Image 1 (cartoon, rainbow, N blue to C red):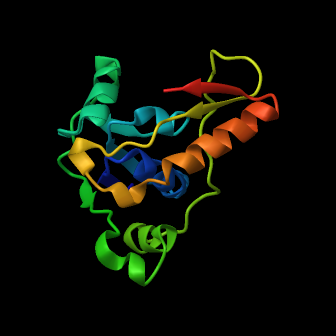
Image 2: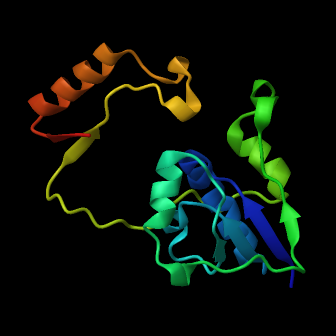
Length: 162
């Protein structure tokens, strides 16, 4: 059986990566992930290793996890480096990850999450520039968020501001 250790810390990266991890597991690989987002992989038979992230949100989520979740890296496993770096000018994230993983992804999915809020709702997060990843170009204009939020409220959808 092939053993792999894989490391990506971003939440979005982990959402994209889930289908590839599932595909590897279905092919008989034993996978350990270094990730602060293990809940993204609920339902998959994989191991988790704590990341050494210094980013605030990732660190806080990792601390929420039970200590029993974490294991050590297996010393006999191959380390698979997954990245897309500056290659986004030649292909999209999925294609670049497929090159790294060497397998196509299983259908994209996430495990079910239980919401404490009943009915239809939207979580509205204000536009911010994060100190640990300062890049204002990653945000839409604040008035776009306001317009979309107001339109959803007109349709009877609850708004939850973060």
